[in-house]
Amino acid sequence: MRITDIFTGIAILGWVGAVGFVVLMYMQNTRGQQIKNSRMIIIAIIAGAVVFTALSAGLVFIEPQERGIVVSALAPKGYRENILQPGLRFVIPFVERVVIYPISKQTYTMSATSAEGQHIGDDSISARTKDGQEVFIDASVIFEVDPEKVAQVHIQWQNRYPEDLVRAQTRGIIRDGVSQFGVEEVVSDKRFELVQFIDTALQKKFSDNGLIMVDFVLRNITFSTEYAASVEQKQIAEQQAKQAAYVVQSKIQEAQQAIETAKGQKEAAIITADGQAQARLIQVKAEADALKQLNDVLAGHPELLTYQYITKLSPTIQTMLLPSGSPFVFQLPDIIGTK
Image (cartoon, rainbow, N blue to C red; front, side):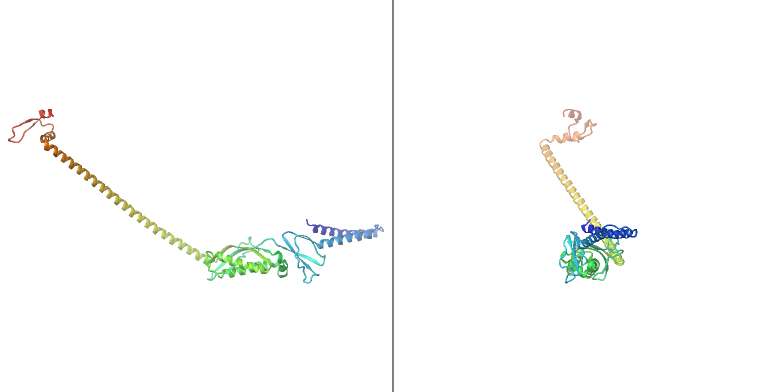
């Protein structure tokens, strides 16, 4: 509880006590009874009430997050130029009064969602882009009263500055900023430039009117129903085009894969045939070498040819007849036995 509230309570009790004592005096007088020193008592009560009333009217406590401007009938300009700083301050009772302004950060929100903004219902900002499209913007402005310019704010705006300055200027500057960009720029690569434009313009406008612009927040951008439908159709068409391109690319990859597979099979077949040919050449060469060696042996031992001939005959033949003119008949068992 503030000390000023205590003094105000004591002053009220004093005036109530004074009235009550006067009533008591009147009732006692009607009964023919008098209260001793009643006049002195009533004067003391009234004097105390006056003192505490004056104190409660003259003492002002300024919170750390507040500043006060003294409106004075005695000042040449109608107000003291020195701003009241935090703490317990005294002004001339009944001649001066203090108007307190918060210097802490304040947020003003304009949104399509009624629960988020200062106004009930849709309070988003309607604006036209450079190419004539209508967009709806949700935004928040964080600001504070400049402690050194409290008197200026009081003179120019009083407590109307949130609505008449912050709200009005923000909506106007947002519309000016949006009108410099196309609708696709607003929602894509130029959005940052739009925010920078609005932030810079608000800082200057607020500074000229005794406020400090802390931050500007572009919360959301929505489109008209017609444009949103056209954007949706465009996105669908782009997705379909991407899908078709993907199918074509997939088919191309499949064809390339089939080509590579065929090339691989061809190379494998060539390698296999080449391997078989090399193997056959090696075999033929080996056979030729074997025949040459056999021929060399037979040249030195011709009887081996006869022996090989005989051994190849059927095992059931016991006798072999030689051509006419040959004087020999070979008994095969004997020959075989001498083998």
